[in-house]
Amino acid sequence: MTSAVCLSGPASSGVGPLINSKKRMRKNKNKIAKVTRPPVEATQGIHLLAKPIGPVCNLNCEYCFYLEKQALFGPNEKYRMSDEVLRAYITKYITSQPTPVVEFVWQGGEPTLLGIDFFKRVIELQKPFAGRKTITNSLQTNGTLLTDKWCAFLKKHNFMVGISLDGPREIHDCYRRNRKGNGTFDQVMRGLRLLQKNKVDYNVLACVARETAKRPLDVYRFLKGEDVEFIQFTPIVERMPDVCGSQLGLRLAGPAALTKEEEQTEVTPWTVIPEEYGDFLIVIYEEWVRHDVGKVFVMNFEWALNAWIGNPSPVCVHAKQCGRSVVIEHNGDVFACDHCVYPQYRLGNIMTSQLPAMVEKSLQMGFGVSKETALPRWCRECEVLAACQGACPKHRFIKIPYDEPGLHYLCPGYKKFFLHIRKYLRVMTKLLENGLPASYIMDAIKGPLVVKLDKK
Image (tube, rainbow, N blue to C red; front, top):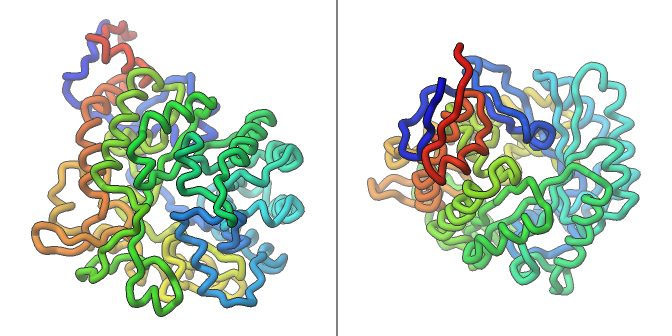
């Protein structure tokens, strides 16, 4: 039989899982995704992000929210995860994980400052558990310290590497500078090319700050021109310090309270403007949907399609609730979230507390649950709630027209983007339901697409 797929067609009803894993996407990018309804209940895993070198970094990026965390540990702190803490972290994380896959994510600061031997020890400590669980490792790096030796190690042990690159030189160097105030573009590009040369699986994390948002196509076309296939855009949002932050010696405000009006709503000069972030995504989406579907994978667009189909969000930002993704610092302290490394969100220490109990403590504190229960009326009545879900609680510091607190700073931008792409999401969903690649939408945009389908 035949079927016509047009941009003006009705929304489809079927839902199903997409290929969310970047590694899986890389292996299956030319295959047809099957659309099936996910199970009603699924085992919820625990995610424990590691910062084995704490906030220590060789760069001084203007918009970094984590460098200031050194104020919480004191001047004589040794920022290196000890072997005892590392062993406890690896052992408890694997044995406490209820799902068959355990994902280790190593972040900082800059984790490559620890040297290759530290990560050789990581692999050694993980090995005894290899038969019990599928263990993966990811490393988030600024890329400036990568060498052929580093890349050979990362390739050998199947690390997924996230490298931070904001775009062409003048955009990247606007915010990402070293401690002497010089741009880091050349060093990062050298690192990127080493990853490519050594065939290390990688993706690019591009931060979207105020000036970056003004040049969407320059950013996207540059990354595409450098043969980057996997991209994630992260909006930069930070507030100027509030009273609590200033008392702790911090230069930025902490998470929003959600249930009460925030006195401090002034954002930093590098924070992206909400509508401009929405326009940034829209302009790139319009180029991507016409030329690059199935060739370039933008995670923000994958998440939107995933939500449209009806699947739970694979990322905490757009999930209904959060709280099961906690973070471990170099000294073993566990906090409720990467964005909540503050004394009031400390859950315990990996040396003295059990991981499930610490996650449960986070949930009992209402940390993750309040992401949903504290949604203001403006969000609950919003037509794109299924895609947005109120976004990250840390940045929900705006008061809404109904005189309620708890609206996300980027709300106008998110809404503009999600509304704009609905017509494309309808078509891609219909294609996937019929066992066809989502990339056929590039033909559908040019006019009605007639495809022959096998009779069932």
